[in-house]
Amino acid sequence: MTAARNTMLVFFGGVAGVSLRWSLIQVFPVSGPWAVYLINVLGSFLLGCLYGYSESYTCSWLTTTEGRLLFGTGLLGGFTTYSTFAVDVVQMSEIGSIAGIIFAGSQLILGACAALCGLWLGNREKSI
Image 1 (cartoon, one colour):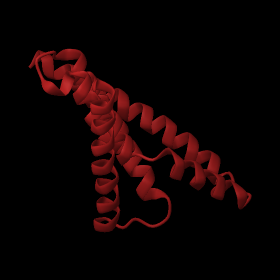
Image 2 (cartoon, one colour):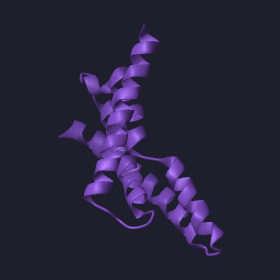
Image 3 (cartoon, rainbow, N blue to C red):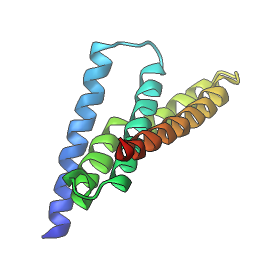
């Protein structure tokens, strides 16, 4: 029963995350691959916050395995999208420019920095 429940948590979180991504793209239409770029960086920051918070607190439902599956794996996993990022990089690289390499490198670096800031912020809340 636990495996089925965990699968449902990831499923419903993923549906919510994909819906949120689609809604943001509709409300804030950004041309080209930049919408996915910004969403991936925001998702990295939010996932960092979630994991930083869950390392600092143990009394919240958010810090349980179920909370991390629903919000981390499901919601934020559905919100961000690696596959679209990969296709954007390939398409940029095919036109013969270094734009694809710059796009990929900057997103990886900025995403890692955003996740680090989120971890710091999540852990920082404990001392307040």
